[in-house]
Image (cartoon, rainbow, N blue to C red; front, top):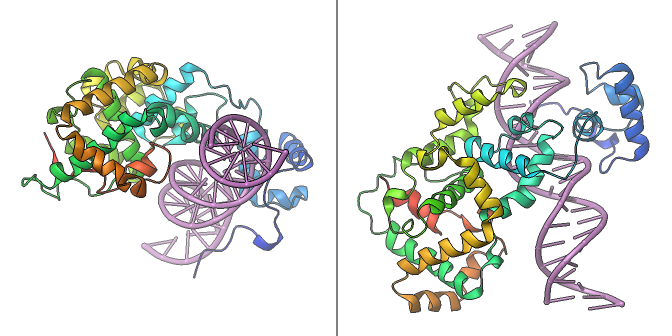
Length: 314
DNA sequence: AAAAACAACAACCGCCTAACG
DNA sequence: GCGTTAGGCGGTTGTTGTTTT
């Protein structure tokens, strides 16, 4: 038997809330509270809405002291810091930012912060982008396939998109410290332990770990530190993570382009091969999106990050 | 000026968990 | 202990406004 629906789908209104609906819901809850029963609430008020929808509307928009937009630099840093540490645990992150909702932070991350931190393909001049694309291809060919020592059981074959994003952030942070040697010094690449912890923290609430019983209302700075320790944030940047994030967020244009492209020059011994490949449009076929985000770039078995995952370890 | 592409964000969907009978 | 249910959460989609071509 399947699970019973929470409401009569045929008779509930969907889509944007009208000011009248907002007013009804707001005045009722302010006067009577939610009664700990969201499902029954819309019927009491006479709203043709699903209880879940009412709950979301109240929590995200109608309840008092909600802030919208206008994220400060401090808030940016907190969000980025926590995302690197604990992944897409938006409710926990929101608990650190009074007045912000998980939905708001999630949207803000997906539409702005992620692009700011990870960069966008079109920010690179065409010639430099060709090198980056070609390097991905080269590393795929020569990296993964040539490592005979890789044990596929040591590391997960696939990472969640959140884990991949955080891995890419790891690269960015590492490259701040070793901008000219990162790509050809495997000791700087993430090892299996980091890959596994990055991946496992995406489902940490269900794992048997000290983090299992976190309540979003009692998160303190020491708790966050405890989480970071448990997760194993690399020591190379954990001591100055805030400053590094600041650098990526607001010093991004200068640092990102210089370090990544110059690094790539160092490993591009066969420039013509890369350009030939670029001009064959193979990269565009694989990554038709215009973004350098994880969804478009970090596809399994196609790019540099997957190469690290499969083939290299400390 | 129109169309296409992109960005931002509100809202929904479905899964998971805890509470309850 | 088990089944059912509501609440909570994260991922995804839909809509609207803005910018670019």
